[in-house]
Length: 83
Image 1: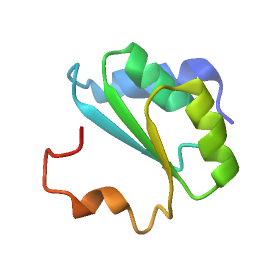
Image 2: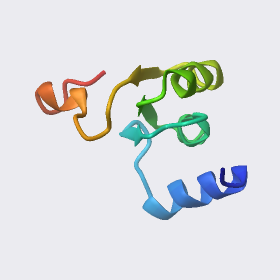
Image 3: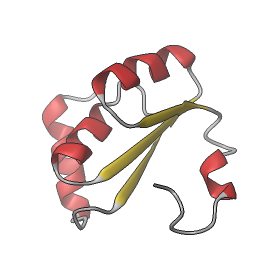
């Protein structure tokens, strides 16, 4: 697990525009999504572990789904339809 301050450094390195979306594959604890939301991003998470999804869902108020990151179910939606 990374130190919490490293998540903010990573997101700031990407220079995202507020309101854009972030998909956290293998979201684990959900800390990356928590920082992303604090910086004005809309975050979504996916993890193969049910336990990780439960933990991440308790950390963030966003959509976290249990699925295999190699077969991301979000891609079945049309571009820009994920809300």
